[in-house]
Length: 156
Image 1 (cartoon, rainbow, N blue to C red):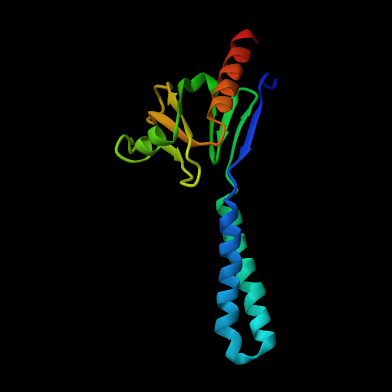
Image 2 (image 1 turned 90 degrees about the horizontal axis):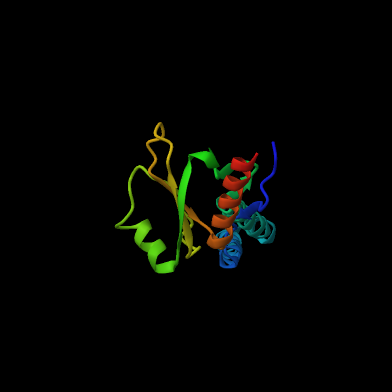
């Protein structure tokens, strides 16, 4: 398998504010356990913070990659030959495609804390998915990587 000329790899990490919220969840657990003494309170702080941080980390563990001749977005893996035109969506257009313009058959890798996205048409007739909606911080770079992978596939 030949790598594309413009590889792309992005991890959709949770925003920094979520880590502060994780700590505040731990503080809440510590306050709940305060009447039981110092050691249970410390356990509540550590345990609550750790549990909330694991949840925030798991939610932010999604990746979007262009590897070889495939686009891998979360659990979806599609060959670039099955992809059509890409449309870079600014914050306003991305919001529209997340709400009233959305097709229920579309594949959404949606992270509401990322304002921009890339909409990629699926051209495979055997696939009922009309398009992929991918939340990404760098939609232009992702579109360029997909086009480069398509070009590398046609020249190979």
